[in-house]
Length: 310
Image 1: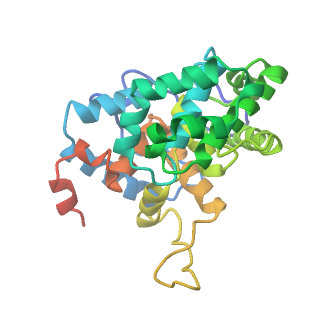
Image 2 (image 1 turned 180 degrees about the vertical axis):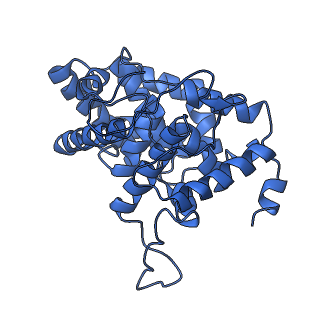
Image 3 (image 1 turned 45 degrees about the horizontal axis):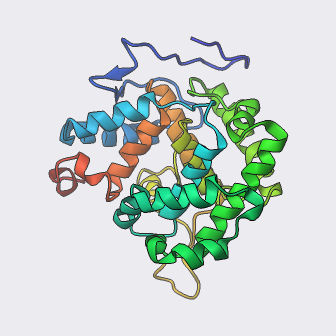
């Protein structure tokens, strides 16, 4: 176990005999958690325990195992990073996930990626040429401005490469802890997160200078994070982690977006709970998605899970 350099902080290590119950399932034996009340911890425990009772294997345990083991690949080159960014952008803004999955797994998407983002120089890229040539094949992403975001991402990655060698080399230099094993690591993670975000904002990096999108990217790359989207935040409200956002003045039936402080509090709670239960934040993120009825996650539990909710 790597010791936390911060004085007065309890380290929580990961061991093969005590880290998980069964095949990667988080423990629910309580350990101390900073900034997380016992009431919230017990509420998450109850959710975890109930999901474990209704889980459908092997799919559920495979997902937990995958999220438990995934770590950042700092050798990943910028071409691979760009493809990851393009895929995440394609799925954004309520695009139909089934149609987008079909697109990004197709030869059409791969040929567009190769033709425009591999074979061409960054300086030669224009969103207009891609839209003019390929929009009929790209309609699943919903909005043409996403193509412009792809091009801008490519240019920003080129700038980062010139300064730091690669995007992953930059993240490595920032020093985000992975995996997170202590409260000290959580603090270090958010210090690094703020540095990364400030840098991306300075570069005018599309999408991923946004708080939620950057969380999503870091989760996708294997860091101990979660994406505070609508589903995760709804569960955070249900569990008492954050308050409901205020209602819109013009349409009182709808809520405003959660303030950034609430998004951060939800993710920090997930991280702290994961440390206390000797598991990882991406695993707890999966439990939130299941409980929140994410379309891609509801099939991991028996439908009776939802009918038996109290």
